[in-house]
Image (cartoon, rainbow, N blue to C red):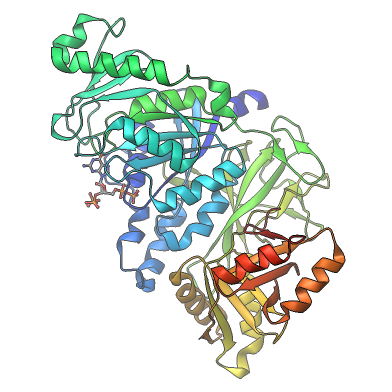
Length: 525
Ligand code: G4P
């Protein structure tokens, strides 16, 4: 197969949802269709979230599983599918944000009873920043839930994206009879069954009397009425708008019952984008270019504390990746060869000889890589940094064992490079502040500092509302701001200016008092 053919058949995406909406179940059913697993219940990676929030030891145990399921590759017909797993636990949301930079599209799972929940809204913001194409799967139609039209309205207003249903449910909950597939004009009848695929009724059009035979006249009439309304309200589905990230097609189904999943997958492989061009600081990189390029979007620490090795996950952006070929590590300028890159196919981790754009390779590493690093076959390229978001929780980190301060410094630096949390240094008192998106990360850091670096840390409270990056075109205005707020100024890892607002009120006042200062809530600006 040529490089272009390899690229064209790849679909690299992530499934995102609020915990419990059904992401794990849907992932599993997709793997089932791809023949990557043979029975339901085989994927339990996201069960991490099911354990108590503070049970870090349990999470540590489970990390072994999550390495294996970080990337799930399988073939489906002519397509090569790569699903990138995102942590279910919301305390690891930052990890999810970064994974979203390595995918070409996203499937969002929404629970029909709960509608759009907080975490989905946040993740959608990241997709919107990058115009990532999005398909929405409304799940759990076998349970009582909300009216599908209401759900569509909510999706539009909460996710701030136009929607277009491509399938439509016939009733919901106990009376749920199936879905009409608007994309392919077919009718699928619902039989609750966790392993088997639903029954399909062949029909010619929405007026086909076989619909009445299958679901009864009343429901058939209601279906026709709904579909007429949909055609009247929602413009014709336009793949181009989907690919631009301005319209999200919506499917309805029940992941647990494997219902509506195949329709979703069949439509997905047809319309979802193959690997797309990637923006580097220097230029736009097209996947079909000969030269290899890729970037590290995730680093997974090893669980063996005696070997501080980890796996760096590299998303291939262009060209063919080959084992043992010399690649340039842009940040260090070193040429590196990788003898044992791994890829993930059908739940197995194997050493691979080659991989193509859209694929993810895992590279065993002993500290060479940082999140966001670029690798190329020679050209000087830097992929745009991965975004960090304003953290929401803060603590001072202090050394609890003065004899081990070197270990602590090294540990903090490496954990931050791995993207576990963000570090800010207060310019006023020089104290280090760790910012996270969830309580759990503080425990993770403390545990790993101790077990991997032999260092002891202590957390001290700091009352902060948000950290935001600031900049201005007017150096004097910037200097005036920094002078006025000197106690609340910090720098991030890269030495950029960060304002530490201790309340929402203070932040709003600062924004109105200093109109020449731009406040950013993501590091990508
Ligand atoms: P998540 O990864 O998004 O957090 O969700 P997950 O797939 O773990 O699903 C959350 C719960 O919702 C699970 O139940 C799962 O069985 C259930 N579920 C998923 N899809 C459907 C569906 O289409 N219909 C119904 N009725 N339930 C669904 P659980 O009891 O929490 O876990 P488990 O013991 O079944 O694993």
